[in-house]
Length: 207
Image (tube, rainbow, N blue to C red):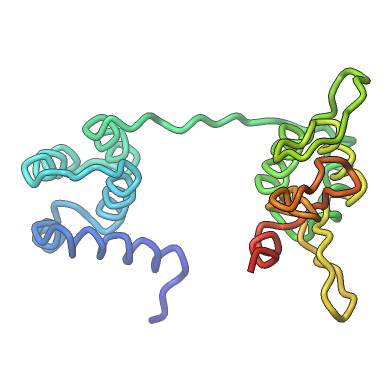
């Protein structure tokens, strides 16, 4: 319809709220609130996952008349008791930026936020144990940290699924550990019986 992506998202969000609460349409027609405010209100109500009564919605609309979108967000968060999101701005030096770009090449064309999320998740999930305790293989669903770390390192943090044509999956996100011989069939939890699969191929294996 000739709209930008941002305009489309705004209109769709506002429309969702208008469908649920017809009074919002009259507020927009009367110029009391605009589409941006309606979209912000819609998104926050959806995020709160609570049913907002009509009288509360009217009270919110009265408070956000002639106010900025930022002020609208503050009012709605206060009414719906939604905590403000936490942000941390980090400044990287040239050397750190170069390292980040090198790591990005392993994961493809993704944003800085997506890359940092992946790296933090992998570090938390696959942290190597700080001791050298010998791991005794068992028939168990539990996979020791030492085995987890070794499995991801061996797989180079990439899904190990290989198709019939010999093509390996290139997914490096949403990775999970899987028993090659199922636990239900006495599969051990040692490195030889553990593989790395993306969530889709892990589900596919179960079919």
